[in-house]
Image 1 (cartoon, rainbow, N blue to C red):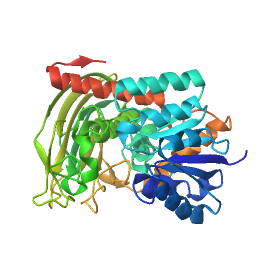
Image 2: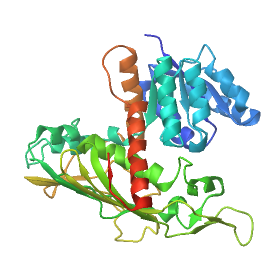
Image 3: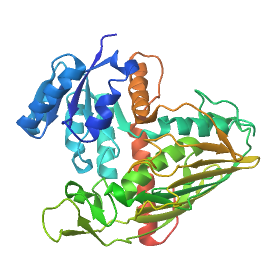
Image 4: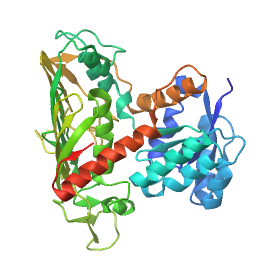
Length: 412
């Protein structure tokens, strides 16, 4: 099979596409089957700079497009098979639909659409055109997730788990029925439980400069509801996909949310004093629910906390009839070190640490590309998050928001 030719919308010299998505295509197992042939940025200078930069790493020419016309040209380029969309969440819809209309398979970061309605529109158009949509939810591919699934299926003595999956462990039933799960998230922390699922504390560290009392000048849109980039949509959305992948779907949910930091200072502004922006989307979310399996779930997600010594940043506990599993972030080593979709976290079964090999963020992303490749070759289904799964995740998020807004339990 010939190499799959990739066109990037949103790949410049810096940003998420530059530090994560592009490097994942240079992973040896991926590079042999994919090649970057085109990119599009907002301006001609940035496109030319990026094309020259990445040409050196790819080893072949890269076409440089820019602006709205550039998007149209890139998706219709006969030398582009797969379109990768990595722009700000509020702007996902148009380039994704343009790629679908051109009959191209497309990758888009989570959330696919800024709202449930946009995500459903993408799903509808993709189905009509018969194209694949890959959604960037990397957490389910992490080594930590695979180990958790595996351990749920094994006995209490943690064996070597190299290459094994956490979810598989759960499904084997060797730990017994999942009773509860707890997730704690401080935008530095998360915790979950299986027989019962309870989120105690989860925190987003203040030094991320997202969803707290400080914000970068280019990110102020994340405080606006229905932007596709609120604290709930990004952080809770990523975690819920991993949670459901391991433990199954929610049957009902009840949530409470609030805004602890009603304004945020723009830290990189040249103004003195720096301007502030009004926060209109919750930065703290607590939820309880029941899974279709009957397990109880509780979660708390918090943003804006300082990464002080001793503060839990991520804790996920899964309690089963015959034992328990705990995933807990080590002390923060960087702004994103508590995000399970980016970093591999320690796993403990009945208090004993499980040793396993992890591939980190690039390995998680590479797994999606290889899963897509496998499907293209007709070697089976699965291996990446589909647009249909993204719609279900958005429906769950909307149910959580509805519950918090109206003060009622929402059945799913």
